[in-house]
Image (cartoon, rainbow, N blue to C red; front, side, top):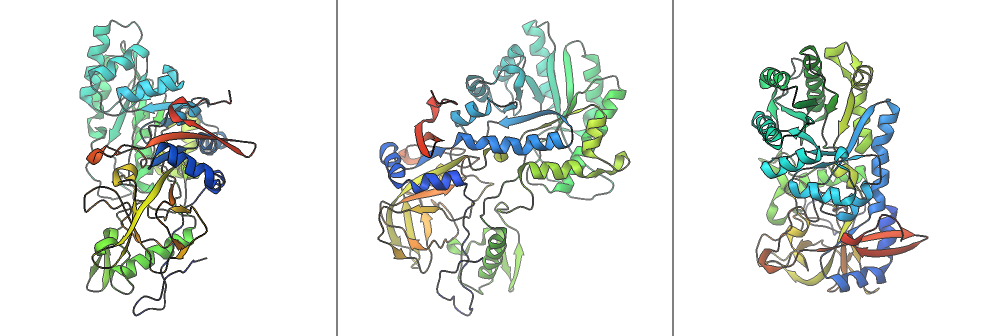
Length: 493
């Protein structure tokens, strides 16, 4: 059901569409504790990141249930890259999952959180220090290039280790005769055309290298392209077996979606309204008529969205279930799940964003209200774009206003959120939003679902503004307990 709040735009009877955020029951209950929200903001300052570690359990189960459904073996990896929260990592370590790290520092982070080395996989660009730590700890190394394979072998020899280095090989350059697409250039992986030489190298180094299988990690691709990557990976896996190698499984990476918008119907209506604004049928909905990727070409909308899908058809484990249930044509039309299972292979996945769904929010405080040059209402916050910003994840959903009092001013014309930097481009969100009421100075604003790739992924002390503190929240018997994220205990003590 659409919520309509603004006066009729010029030349149309349609009113602007609100895009509310999908909010968990736990986060909603927390935001109803107004005194607690303001105590935390007053005590730690604005902005403040609030972590809900208990929410990760439901996300893990979403993937575990798919493994059980298809009778698959393997491992789900908690990816530490999207968020620096220590509480989330400590909570995740209690479950039967692994940890995917992407730097020497993140390796130390998950070790301290409770992950043993046999549960850790190392990805990302690797220097000598990073590789040495992984070899000494016997961490699984997901090699990104041929050069990295040679470096792993060289360092393994210099360390004089008696055990083999556990290695996977990351792939890129996928293709299929049944599907034509124009792939983008990428920085991850070894091209599949170079794998015959990799086979020879792996076979000649079997005494020192324990080859565990192939992996890939693809961002911003459709399901059909991911299925091609899965099919290519399986083809190369069986080719490796014929070469005398013993791969254990395939790693299909992450990229699993979550839903940011409360309603898929509202999201679809919002996008149509946004497109209408681009061609002038309704008032502009983007700062300085930016369009967020859409453009006006003689009255026709062209271009594409420069933001993520806020209401995908499938999310988290449901998306994995869909992929595994598809038929791999190159293998006699068997499903991917049956091929992996019946071949006694294991499946590895690296959900990052999907394991952090509803695990965090970012609180801020309203600093001022003013008018822009063109008369738009601007709500200035005690935060900046680096506190809640990612180049590839633009969240268009309106935040939740937590007012200090019942004194409300009806929001008739929408407003933009801006930050506290002395920079003209410090927009917290580039789209206009339409909550029921206009916030007042001192009110709290809560951005929902910011744990993954938003709350501290690009954060910096820009212009000497401090970065946000983190607190972790535990709910027990209807009461909320909080503590520093770094001091979080996964049990009540």
